Amino acid sequence: MARIDTENINREREPSGSAAGSATVPAQPATKSLGSRAQGTVATLLRAQNVHRLLGSGDTVTHILKGVSLVVDRMEYMSIVGPSGSGKSTLLYLLGGLDRPNRGDDEGKPFSPPSAVFIDGENTHDLTDAQLAVVRNEKIGFIFQFHYLLKEFTAQENVALPMFKLGRWSRDECLKRAAGLLDQFSLSSKLKRRANRLSGGEQQRVAIARALANEPAVLLADEPTGNLDRKNTEIVADIFNSLAARGQTIVMVTHDQALAQRARRMITMEDGTIVSDRVLA
Ligand SMILES: Nc1ncnc2c1ncn2[C@@H]1O[C@H](COP(=O)(O)OP(=O)(O)O)[C@@H](O)[C@H]1O
Ligand SMILES: [Mg+2]
Image (cartoon, rainbow, N blue to C red; front, side, top):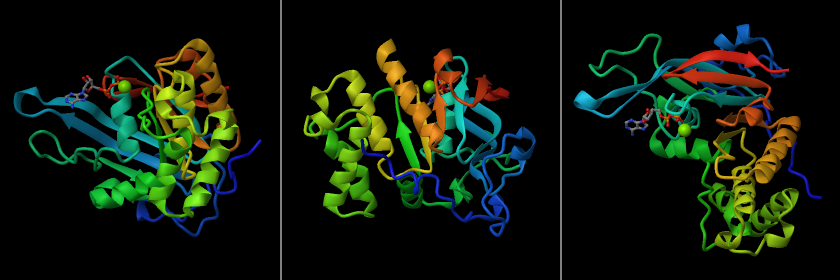
Protein backbone atom coordinates (compact mmCIF):
# COMPACT_ATOMS: atom_id res chain seq x y z
CA MET A 1 0.00 0.00 0.00
CA ALA A 2 1.31 3.42 -0.89
CA ARG A 3 2.06 5.77 1.95
CA ILE A 4 1.96 9.50 2.36
CA ASP A 5 5.40 11.02 2.20
CA THR A 6 5.53 11.59 5.94
CA GLU A 7 8.96 13.18 5.71
CA ASN A 8 7.41 16.32 4.35
CA ILE A 9 4.35 16.36 6.56
CA ASN A 10 4.87 18.80 9.39
CA ARG A 11 8.36 19.61 8.23
CA GLU A 12 9.62 22.26 10.59
CA ARG A 13 9.69 25.72 9.13
CA GLU A 14 11.43 28.82 10.31
CA PRO A 15 8.81 31.10 11.81
CA SER A 16 8.38 33.94 9.35
CA GLY A 17 7.04 36.53 11.77
CA SER A 18 8.41 37.94 14.97
CA ALA A 19 5.29 36.80 16.82
CA ALA A 20 6.35 33.18 16.57
CA GLY A 21 9.38 33.71 18.78
CA SER A 22 13.06 33.11 18.18
CA ALA A 23 13.85 31.36 14.91
CA THR A 24 17.19 30.14 16.25
CA VAL A 25 15.72 27.76 18.81
CA PRO A 26 15.79 24.17 17.48
CA ALA A 27 12.43 22.59 16.66
CA GLN A 28 10.69 21.24 19.73
CA PRO A 29 8.22 18.38 19.88
CA ALA A 30 4.62 19.44 20.55
CA THR A 31 4.32 20.24 24.21
CA LYS A 32 1.52 18.95 26.39
CA SER A 33 1.81 21.84 28.80
CA LEU A 34 -1.15 24.15 28.40
CA GLY A 35 0.76 26.78 30.37
CA SER A 36 3.30 27.35 27.61
CA ARG A 37 0.67 27.81 24.92
CA ALA A 38 -0.02 31.42 25.72
CA GLN A 39 3.21 32.84 24.28
CA GLY A 40 3.70 30.93 21.05
CA THR A 41 6.84 28.85 20.48
CA VAL A 42 8.67 27.28 17.56
CA ALA A 43 6.20 24.40 17.85
CA THR A 44 3.33 26.85 17.27
CA LEU A 45 1.54 26.40 13.98
CA LEU A 46 -1.68 28.37 14.41
CA ARG A 47 -2.37 31.09 16.92
CA ALA A 48 -5.54 33.00 17.66
CA GLN A 49 -4.89 36.09 19.76
CA ASN A 50 -7.93 37.76 21.35
CA VAL A 51 -9.90 36.99 18.20
CA HIS A 52 -13.13 38.87 17.69
CA ARG A 53 -15.52 38.45 14.78
CA LEU A 54 -18.55 40.63 14.21
CA LEU A 55 -20.95 39.90 11.38
CA GLY A 56 -23.85 41.85 9.95
CA SER A 57 -24.14 45.63 10.01
CA GLY A 58 -25.95 48.45 11.72
CA ASP A 59 -28.62 47.30 14.16
CA THR A 60 -28.14 43.63 13.27
CA VAL A 61 -24.41 43.40 13.99
CA THR A 62 -23.70 40.19 15.92
CA HIS A 63 -20.62 39.60 18.03
CA ILE A 64 -19.84 36.00 17.06
CA LEU A 65 -16.36 35.47 18.54
CA LYS A 66 -15.69 37.40 21.72
CA GLY A 67 -11.96 37.31 22.34
CA VAL A 68 -10.78 33.78 21.56
CA SER A 69 -7.14 32.91 22.26
CA LEU A 70 -5.79 29.54 21.23
CA VAL A 71 -2.47 28.00 20.22
CA VAL A 72 -2.27 24.93 18.01
CA ASP A 73 1.12 23.26 18.10
CA ARG A 74 2.57 21.05 15.38
CA MET A 75 1.50 17.40 15.68
CA GLU A 76 -1.54 18.20 17.80
CA TYR A 77 -4.82 16.38 17.24
CA MET A 78 -7.52 18.69 18.58
CA SER A 79 -11.28 18.59 18.50
CA ILE A 80 -13.58 21.57 18.93
CA VAL A 81 -17.06 20.93 20.31
CA GLY A 82 -19.93 23.10 21.52
CA PRO A 83 -23.55 23.92 20.78
CA SER A 84 -24.68 24.89 17.32
CA GLY A 85 -24.09 28.60 16.78
CA SER A 86 -21.30 28.86 19.37
CA GLY A 87 -18.78 30.00 16.73
CA LYS A 88 -16.87 26.78 15.98
CA SER A 89 -16.93 27.09 12.18
CA THR A 90 -16.20 30.81 12.35
CA LEU A 91 -13.10 30.11 14.46
CA LEU A 92 -11.94 27.28 12.19
CA TYR A 93 -12.21 29.45 9.06
CA LEU A 94 -10.26 32.22 10.76
CA LEU A 95 -7.52 29.77 11.81
CA GLY A 96 -7.30 28.57 8.20
CA GLY A 97 -7.22 32.03 6.64
CA LEU A 98 -10.58 31.70 4.89
CA ASP A 99 -11.66 34.78 6.82
CA ARG A 100 -9.99 37.46 8.93
CA PRO A 101 -10.80 38.66 12.44
CA ASN A 102 -12.21 42.12 13.13
CA ARG A 103 -9.59 44.53 14.44
CA GLY A 104 -12.06 46.73 16.28
CA ASP A 105 -15.60 46.73 17.67
CA ASP A 106 -18.67 48.08 15.86
CA GLU A 107 -17.61 51.61 16.74
CA GLY A 108 -14.10 51.03 15.40
CA LYS A 109 -12.41 50.89 18.80
CA PRO A 110 -9.44 48.49 18.47
CA PHE A 111 -9.37 45.37 20.63
CA SER A 112 -6.54 45.02 23.12
CA PRO A 113 -4.44 42.96 22.80
CA PRO A 114 -4.93 43.16 19.00
CA SER A 115 -7.41 40.70 17.50
CA ALA A 116 -5.27 38.60 15.15
CA VAL A 117 -4.63 35.14 13.71
CA PHE A 118 -1.12 33.89 12.96
CA ILE A 119 -0.56 31.04 10.51
CA ASP A 120 2.96 29.69 10.92
CA GLY A 121 3.99 33.03 12.39
CA GLU A 122 2.34 35.22 9.75
CA ASN A 123 -0.39 37.62 10.81
CA THR A 124 -3.27 37.15 8.35
CA HIS A 125 -4.00 40.90 8.59
CA ASP A 126 -0.60 41.58 6.98
CA LEU A 127 -1.28 39.45 3.89
CA THR A 128 -3.15 40.45 0.73
CA ASP A 129 -6.00 38.18 -0.38
CA ALA A 130 -3.68 36.64 -2.99
CA GLN A 131 -0.91 36.02 -0.45
CA LEU A 132 -3.39 34.49 1.97
CA ALA A 133 -4.67 32.19 -0.79
CA VAL A 134 -1.10 30.98 -1.38
CA VAL A 135 -0.62 30.32 2.34
CA ARG A 136 -3.88 28.34 2.40
CA ASN A 137 -2.97 26.23 -0.61
CA GLU A 138 0.48 25.46 0.77
CA LYS A 139 -0.22 24.95 4.44
CA ILE A 140 -3.88 24.21 5.09
CA GLY A 141 -5.98 21.22 4.09
CA PHE A 142 -9.72 21.79 4.51
CA ILE A 143 -12.39 19.12 4.90
CA PHE A 144 -16.03 20.17 5.13
CA GLN A 145 -19.27 18.40 5.95
CA PHE A 146 -20.14 18.49 2.25
CA HIS A 147 -17.27 17.36 0.12
CA TYR A 148 -17.40 20.09 -2.58
CA LEU A 149 -15.75 17.80 -5.12
CA LEU A 150 -15.94 18.84 -8.77
CA LYS A 151 -18.55 16.34 -9.86
CA GLU A 152 -17.59 16.19 -13.54
CA PHE A 153 -13.98 15.34 -12.66
CA THR A 154 -12.63 11.95 -11.65
CA ALA A 155 -11.56 11.10 -8.10
CA GLN A 156 -7.93 11.26 -9.21
CA GLU A 157 -8.35 14.63 -10.92
CA ASN A 158 -10.09 16.10 -7.88
CA VAL A 159 -7.13 15.13 -5.69
CA ALA A 160 -4.56 16.32 -8.25
CA LEU A 161 -6.14 19.77 -8.78
CA PRO A 162 -4.61 21.47 -5.68
CA MET A 163 -1.23 20.05 -6.71
CA PHE A 164 -1.56 21.48 -10.23
CA LYS A 165 -2.29 24.85 -8.64
CA LEU A 166 0.71 24.63 -6.30
CA GLY A 167 3.09 23.89 -9.17
CA ARG A 168 5.58 21.93 -7.10
CA TRP A 169 5.30 18.74 -9.16
CA SER A 170 4.91 17.86 -12.86
CA ARG A 171 1.43 16.99 -14.13
CA ASP A 172 2.29 13.27 -14.30
CA GLU A 173 3.77 13.36 -10.82
CA CYS A 174 0.62 15.05 -9.49
CA LEU A 175 -1.59 12.33 -10.95
CA LYS A 176 0.70 9.64 -9.57
CA ARG A 177 0.69 11.21 -6.13
CA ALA A 178 -3.11 11.53 -6.26
CA ALA A 179 -3.37 7.82 -7.07
CA GLY A 180 -1.07 7.06 -4.13
CA LEU A 181 -3.22 9.06 -1.73
CA LEU A 182 -6.44 7.47 -2.96
CA ASP A 183 -4.85 4.04 -2.64
CA GLN A 184 -4.25 4.70 1.06
CA PHE A 185 -7.96 5.19 1.51
CA SER A 186 -8.86 1.99 -0.36
CA LEU A 187 -9.97 3.85 -3.47
CA SER A 188 -7.44 2.54 -5.97
CA SER A 189 -10.21 0.90 -8.00
CA LYS A 190 -12.12 4.21 -8.23
CA LEU A 191 -9.41 6.55 -9.58
CA LYS A 192 -11.13 7.15 -12.90
CA ARG A 193 -14.65 7.32 -11.54
CA ARG A 194 -16.42 10.66 -11.74
CA ALA A 195 -16.97 12.16 -8.31
CA ASN A 196 -20.76 12.20 -8.63
CA ARG A 197 -20.73 8.44 -9.24
CA LEU A 198 -19.08 7.65 -5.90
CA SER A 199 -20.94 6.85 -2.67
CA GLY A 200 -21.12 9.45 0.12
CA GLY A 201 -18.43 7.70 2.14
CA GLU A 202 -16.16 7.39 -0.89
CA GLN A 203 -16.66 11.05 -1.75
CA GLN A 204 -15.61 12.11 1.73
CA ARG A 205 -12.48 9.93 1.51
CA VAL A 206 -11.63 11.59 -1.82
CA ALA A 207 -12.12 14.95 -0.08
CA ILE A 208 -9.67 13.87 2.66
CA ALA A 209 -7.14 12.80 0.03
CA ARG A 210 -7.60 16.17 -1.70
CA ALA A 211 -7.04 17.99 1.60
CA LEU A 212 -3.75 16.10 2.00
CA ALA A 213 -2.66 16.73 -1.60
CA ASN A 214 -0.10 19.43 -0.84
CA GLU A 215 1.22 17.90 2.38
CA PRO A 216 -0.48 20.59 4.47
CA ALA A 217 0.99 21.61 7.79
CA VAL A 218 -2.49 21.26 9.25
CA LEU A 219 -5.75 19.56 8.39
CA LEU A 220 -8.82 21.60 9.38
CA ALA A 221 -12.08 19.65 9.36
CA ASP A 222 -15.56 21.09 9.90
CA GLU A 223 -18.08 18.36 10.80
CA PRO A 224 -16.26 15.89 8.51
CA THR A 225 -18.65 13.07 9.40
CA GLY A 226 -21.80 15.20 9.64
CA ASN A 227 -23.18 13.72 6.46
CA LEU A 228 -22.03 10.11 6.95
CA ASP A 229 -23.57 6.97 8.44
CA ARG A 230 -21.99 5.18 11.44
CA LYS A 231 -19.85 2.85 9.34
CA ASN A 232 -18.36 5.63 7.24
CA THR A 233 -17.94 7.81 10.32
CA GLU A 234 -15.80 5.00 11.80
CA ILE A 235 -13.73 4.81 8.62
CA VAL A 236 -13.08 8.56 8.69
CA ALA A 237 -12.30 8.45 12.43
CA ASP A 238 -9.75 5.68 11.82
CA ILE A 239 -8.16 7.69 9.00
CA PHE A 240 -7.82 10.72 11.27
CA ASN A 241 -6.29 8.59 14.02
CA SER A 242 -3.69 7.08 11.73
CA LEU A 243 -2.84 10.48 10.24
CA ALA A 244 -2.44 11.89 13.76
CA ALA A 245 -0.26 8.94 14.74
CA ARG A 246 2.02 9.82 11.81
CA GLY A 247 2.36 13.38 13.07
CA GLN A 248 -0.28 15.16 10.98
CA THR A 249 -1.61 18.22 12.83
CA ILE A 250 -5.42 18.08 12.88
CA VAL A 251 -8.09 20.47 14.15
CA MET A 252 -11.57 19.02 13.85
CA VAL A 253 -14.92 20.63 14.63
CA THR A 254 -17.55 18.02 15.43
CA HIS A 255 -20.75 17.57 17.40
CA ASP A 256 -20.06 13.82 17.56
CA GLN A 257 -18.82 13.31 21.14
CA ALA A 258 -17.37 9.86 20.42
CA LEU A 259 -15.35 11.26 17.54
CA ALA A 260 -14.26 14.31 19.55
CA GLN A 261 -13.02 12.03 22.35
CA ARG A 262 -10.60 10.35 19.95
CA ALA A 263 -8.54 13.52 19.63
CA ARG A 264 -5.76 14.27 22.11
CA ARG A 265 -7.06 17.66 23.13
CA MET A 266 -10.61 18.95 23.23
CA ILE A 267 -11.75 22.56 23.16
CA THR A 268 -15.32 23.42 24.14
CA MET A 269 -16.93 26.62 22.88
CA GLU A 270 -20.01 28.42 24.12
CA ASP A 271 -21.44 31.68 22.89
CA GLY A 272 -18.29 32.83 21.09
CA THR A 273 -15.76 31.93 23.75
CA ILE A 274 -13.66 28.92 24.77
CA VAL A 275 -15.04 27.55 28.03
CA SER A 276 -12.80 24.53 28.39
CA ASP A 277 -9.48 23.24 27.01
CA ARG A 278 -8.63 19.69 28.05
CA VAL A 279 -5.89 17.20 27.29
CA LEU A 280 -7.51 13.80 26.71
CA ALA A 281 -6.00 10.53 27.84
N1 LIG B 1 -22.72 35.94 7.72
C1 LIG B 1 -23.27 35.94 8.93
N2 LIG B 1 -23.99 37.00 9.36
C2 LIG B 1 -24.54 37.02 10.60
N3 LIG B 1 -24.42 36.01 11.48
C3 LIG B 1 -23.73 34.92 11.10
C4 LIG B 1 -23.12 34.82 9.82
N4 LIG B 1 -22.49 33.63 9.75
C5 LIG B 1 -22.71 33.00 10.92
N5 LIG B 1 -23.44 33.78 11.73
C6 LIG B 1 -23.88 33.45 13.11
O1 LIG B 1 -22.72 33.25 13.89
C7 LIG B 1 -22.97 32.30 14.91
C8 LIG B 1 -21.87 31.27 14.91
O2 LIG B 1 -21.89 30.55 13.71
P1 LIG B 1 -20.94 29.30 13.45
O3 LIG B 1 -19.53 29.71 13.61
O4 LIG B 1 -21.33 28.74 12.13
O5 LIG B 1 -21.36 28.34 14.65
P2 LIG B 1 -21.14 26.78 14.84
O6 LIG B 1 -20.21 26.30 13.78
O7 LIG B 1 -20.62 26.63 16.23
O8 LIG B 1 -22.51 26.16 14.70
C9 LIG B 1 -24.33 31.72 14.63
O9 LIG B 1 -25.23 32.31 15.53
C10 LIG B 1 -24.62 32.14 13.21
O10 LIG B 1 -25.99 32.32 13.01
MG1 LIG C 1 -20.49 24.99 12.19
